[in-house]
Structure formats: structure tokens, C-alpha cells
Length: 90
Image 1 (cartoon, rainbow, N blue to C red):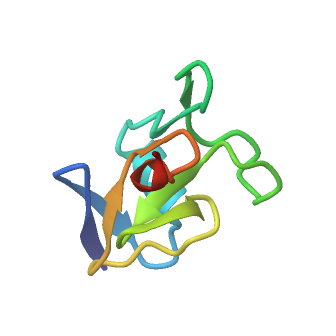
Image 2 (cartoon, rainbow, N blue to C red; image 1 turned 60 degrees about the horizontal axis):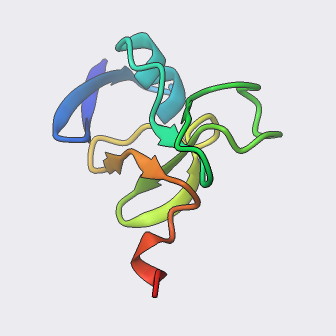
Image 3 (cartoon, rainbow, N blue to C red; image 1 turned 180 degrees about the vertical axis):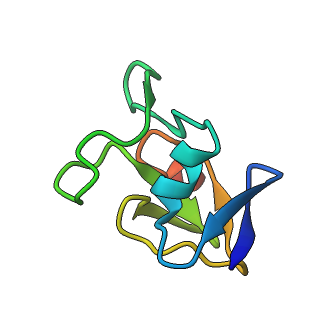
């Protein structure tokens, strides 16, 4: 059975048991985060939760590892800039 979640305003299809990261890669999305200092693009690197390259914001909660979070049709996923705490900037 196929479903979809919202990612940066577009629907991303996924199958039951897929992670957010797997669904994004399957949809052709290769980057969904930028680094803190230089703004370089990042996506899945290790795919097993060891690194933090695949961070996304899910339902307004930043710093979620896309490779570990199961895809859910009720989720709103957004690209993340830097460490995901831009709202705390002074």
C-alpha cells in the first residue's frame, strides 16, 4: 500500500516500512539539509543513524534523522538549514 507525506510543499510517496530518508531518495531528492557554516547540501550518508547528515524538520521538530524516522502520511517534513535552530538566533 502506498501513501505520501508532505516535503517542502510537495507530496512524497512511500510504502509501508520505508523511512523518510528512503522515500526522499526514491523520489529523487538527494539533499535536504545544509551545513551550519558553509551551507553545503547534505542528504543520506550512512543510512543507519550514525552520522547526522540526513537531518530534517518533521512536524516542527528539528534535527530528526531521516534515515531512522518511519514515513507517516500525517507528517510534514521540511528541509533543514544548519542545526535547525534558526528560530533561536539573536
